[in-house]
Image 1 (tube, helix red, strand yellow):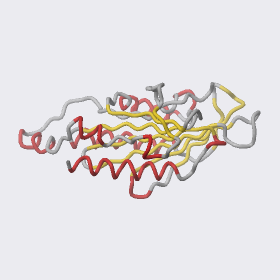
Image 2 (cartoon, helix red, strand yellow; image 1 turned 60 degrees about the vertical axis):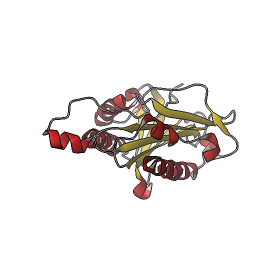
Image 3 (tube, rainbow, N blue to C red; image 1 turned 180 degrees about the horizontal axis):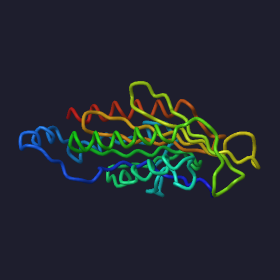
Image 4 (cartoon, one colour; image 1 turned 90 degrees about the vertical axis):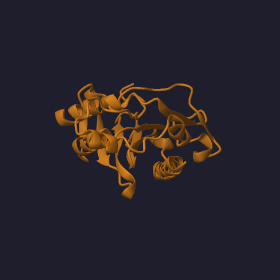
Length: 219
């Protein structure tokens, strides 16, 4: 299958943080516990009565570099690859359908969280060009990546795969949103076949995820 169903996964970027002891201390203030982060994860009932936990857990890049438009986008995808190491994650699917929400939460120092957020924004900037492009791996297919407006929640993009031999509509749709609350990031992905696509589910899930994280961080 050309498009790999994947999980948008979050993790900390590696690297040391340099600075004075006071700066380092301030950078590490307010680190949430693993229990707090787990409490912030979406539950199937948060999305609807027909959602259940997915047994298969995908931990691969959202976009394969062979299926993106430009070299800059491929490089941006590579820079975000370290995000796929989060231990605080959940995979939720609507019944037996190939429609689901994947969520990954990571927390770290202010500097590391900022670096991770910048990497995600660069991916949106370099990939979401809004034009259809043929795929090298399948000349008969095209992909379109556009910015996904999510207001003040964060930054997002939408990937649409078009298989002309199937129909005039996209075969696959993936919405991706990155949300920051203090020094914690949420990576949220909604993926499905186009015929199952619910345009309101991404924003609804993002709002719920944000509210749950804000509540968990106060505990």
